[in-house]
Image (cartoon, rainbow, N blue to C red; front, top):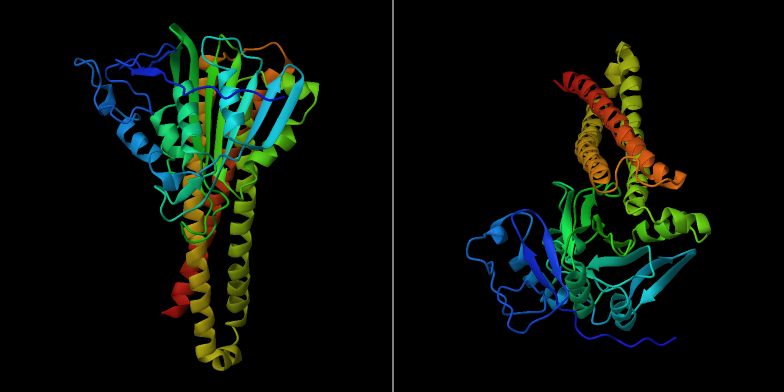
Length: 401
């Protein structure tokens, strides 16, 4: 079926100190202080002289406008993945072009009925030296501007879509939609890069996985933007685990389902990370134990000489790398703990601890609570490995003196 492409999406976004965003579906050419991302002449000041919300974090309209006008950040034509859930039907479109994106947005304008309970826009990032954050998204400028404007996406989230490392805090807030107060909300976060186990290199390492949720209560539709590295399995795992049956469609009505699902995926990535730390730690510890056992024999000391010293120096280098990996893992676990706490708080605030009568709804919150507890255990293991590394390093140092 051929759908017509709608015209440009204009919406006046008013940031207020209350933390609410009003989405006005009526456009006016005489708007003052418009935050429309398609208005190149919009000043970086608020239209109201007695409000100064533009200087407050996390809003950064100037940075967002610069990012959206940098061609190196985009592909000329879109090729993103889109998942939609309507009633009992789950559909995954592997390559959605600009026409598809604009038509989908036209069917789900604020203030109108939506046939979907869940829409996921999956953006892939690949390395590009000329891009703002060294990452180019597989979406066009026009399509992203239309998406950002229609959903009134927070500036901080837009920057994260392009691979900006931003682990400081998850963020959620109520939103006014189509003139209705508290008609929706947004919650977005960025997961630590558990797949990165070596020295940082923008040209080699994956971009962080950023997840954005906009929920429209009137439409009963949850809009997600998932941005991750091109070779990240995040989007494919979401499709695989969500499935295409009736139960998946029922679960998709819970606005926080994808947040919970991706948090679980991040935890599984962390298990591989911790396993890598353990293996890299145990190898030098075995060498140290063998050295310690043999060093009691005088004949071994005579034969070892400089060879034994070189062995200890090599072990020191291995332990140093393990120490750095442990430190990064501990920081990642700390951030993941905070992220899950904020996610649960947002769920209870916007959905309610008992929101939804279906078992699948309760399982979503239970899953987030479980992941929160497991992050604490994961951090404990990394701290323990760091202590064992310190013990091994002390032994090596004493034998090198």
